[in-house]
Length: 135
Image 1: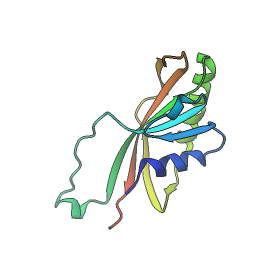
Image 2: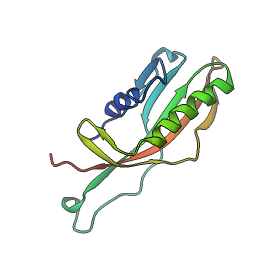
Image 3: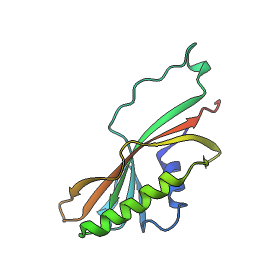
Image 4: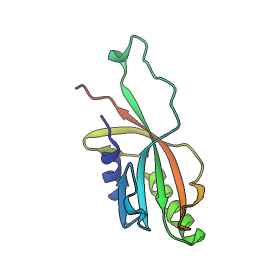
């Protein structure tokens, strides 16, 4: 099983991106933070012919929140840096789980405006297609 924490820990290995990383909730909303969330977009159910016993992969839909600073340009640049690092990775293994395909659902990070303190935020929506491991 691929978890949000596993994905967060892998993103941290992509090089200097952010100062703070979170799963599920951005505690204290620190600037220069990246949060990993389960996506609110639902995926169509995937059932292999013959049932789950015949499935070779699973999917995990996530949203990555880039909570940066009060400057739109630097927020966009930080978001594009992370996006390009995700896009460039083709041979991914997370905690021994082979990622068969990382689908970025939008052609660039999406601007979601500012929080209540005026800090700009952007999101990257993605789906991890990963090799099914027997339990």
